[in-house]
Image 1 (cartoon, rainbow, N blue to C red):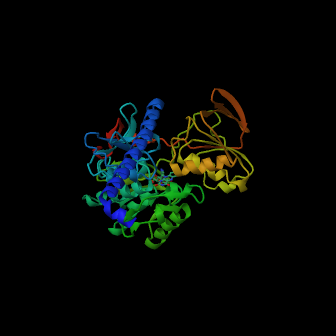
Image 2: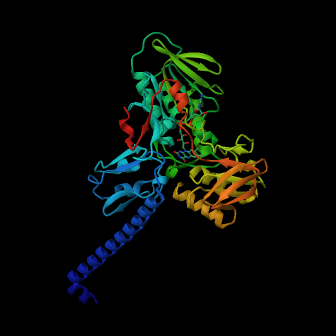
Image 3: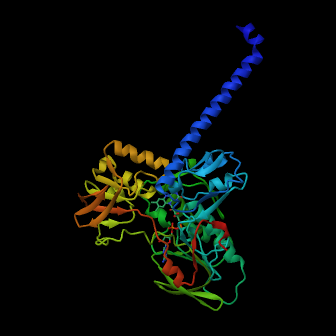
Length: 443
Ligand SMILES: Cc1cc2nc3c(=O)[nH]c(=O)nc-3n(C[C@H](O)[C@H](O)[C@H](O)COP(=O)(O)OP(=O)(O)OC[C@H]3O[C@@H](n4cnc5c(N)ncnc54)[C@H](O)[C@@H]3O)c2cc1C
């Protein structure tokens, strides 16, 4: 045998390499077929990205697949005929890892598409609005995710505090909102030993505070002033751990915050802003609005939507036991809520209502989790379904083409959030409709 190998070594190596190459080609073809199938489906369904997403220049794309491997949401970009394409547009939440990974500079993050405009406040690269000295950071500017909010909070506050000011004001910087963007902005002011104040209408922590109990938060590392890199094991952390990290910072750095104080409006008064709050007027040279979007959840627009049983967030699933629950929305928030409410020990009857034909708006982890509880009989999933009428004890649901009445004690609606356009325009901020335009060119 040894002699045979020695005598035929070159041939054997050649055969081995040929087999390896054939295997690579077969694997590539099979991936290509799957990607083409997904792309066809996207075209048939007319699916469009819901938020910030990659736009790929096919001329620059070298087909290296660097972008396809890095997306935390799963198979959203794939190679088709050696070019990267968006095969999961509705699942994209704008992490931007693909843009950073592309060695050819072929990817640009854009808002909206040629056919679907998205309303976005006009911002400079430092997140300053068209009103000089007034900034928008975080989700209110149209870009979700904790890491993005942290980055924008840092960039906006750093710029705000770097420009010269005249005259006197109560604060150098007023920050509205104590979510990730507002907290990051406050750390910039602390690091620079400047006079600042954070206004928060509810509680410290922002939207994270309202996540369901024990929710796993996915976040890539983000860099905070003073603290350095904010890293969590495997980029996953529970809501409670993340909040306790924020609260630890608040105590250690004595973050100046007025909770239960609502920002109501502002006007420019010479060199500074006069800011109206629910507890009186304050003045500040610069203002960062880091208010997020969760104060304006998208509603169904139905009668009785103001009944106490209807809600747009879920903080404590353990409050709901032995009740009939409907969750509207097949995105990550809706799916996570359905899974949490469907926990066996709670004994709830949970129905997840999804408008489309499948779960194409949540990430793969969430899809697996909800399918597992569905298979265990803990959550029902109804596709092509929407609520048509809300009554105190029941709901009317259009399912496929029939209308059914279901017993209902609580209705959770996770249909996204709306830009508070009127409010922003009332502050003098210009809102643009973006049709596939680059995020960073919004000057
Ligand atoms: C259910 C759910 C799950 C999510 N999961 C993840 C995840 O796993 N990973 C991830 O990266 N992102 C996730 N996100 C998105 C992420 O939470 C947001 O992108 C992020 O919190 C935005 O930060 P922000 O600072 O811009 O705003 P927010 O966190 O929304 O904070 C804004 C703050 O401003 C306050 N505020 C609003 N209006 C006023 C006013 N008039 N006066 C005073 N205060 C005001 C609000 O009370 C709030 O505390 C999730 C979102 C939801 C809803």
